[in-house]
Length: 155
Image (cartoon, rainbow, N blue to C red; front, side, top):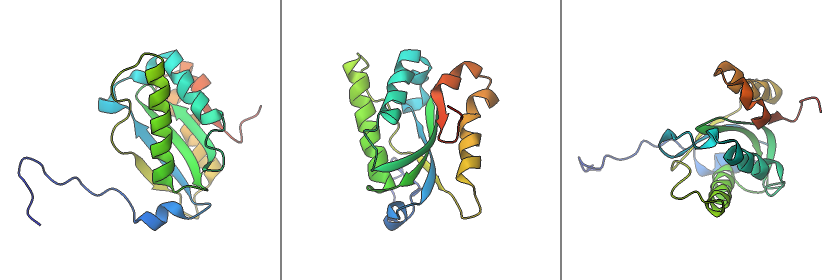
């Protein structure tokens, strides 16, 4: 295949489609804001994102294990359920964008794709969840602890 020098072909970062549809498969996903803008540093904006994760709109479509909302990206630990991972993330990004537009935000919110890592058998979902919720502390942002959660946290 000949590539246009002005528009090089994007590197393929996705697994084969069936890998994203195996029920029970758990993925650590990172979704970045467009151009890594610190859009989520605004507390009200971060609350909107947290509400979309905690509201249950995606219950049955994915199994939420953990999240951390950072200033310019979101970490998710989710299991494949009703929808494949790519479809679920696309729907979530669309929903959050519409909610932020309704609050006055304009333009793109999220970058085009996302990064994913499927957990291997020897990896513990709880250990990965604890790693995810520790992200703000490691980044020197202890005030972000209201924007982290995992299912094993004490109530």
